[in-house]
Image 1 (cartoon, rainbow, N blue to C red):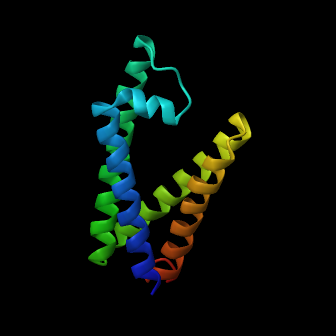
Image 2 (cartoon, one colour):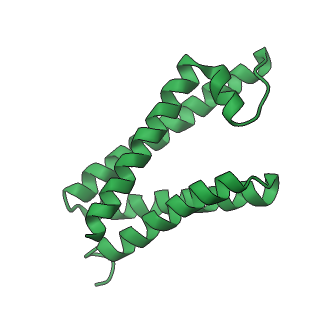
Length: 126
């Protein structure tokens, strides 16, 4: 059950990251608006950098999904890293910018990934 929940979380996260990756390259003004940034020529470069970052996270998330699905221990390690990444990103953005949506979405997603990884990992408790 925990492994299935982890796979659903990783798959869903991969899809969301992929959407933001594509949007960063196709509709950079929309992505900047989601982050409440002005869509001027200087900020369009930031959207490109965000797209590269989102693409890296998408690939790592998809690879973690593949590895967890095939019971490879590295997949759980990547899932731990992704969970910690999202958990800390949500908390840091909340503390610095007071954005509660990031705290709720990213930190909660990270916490759920960490919990499901811990509960589903047969290699982690040996």
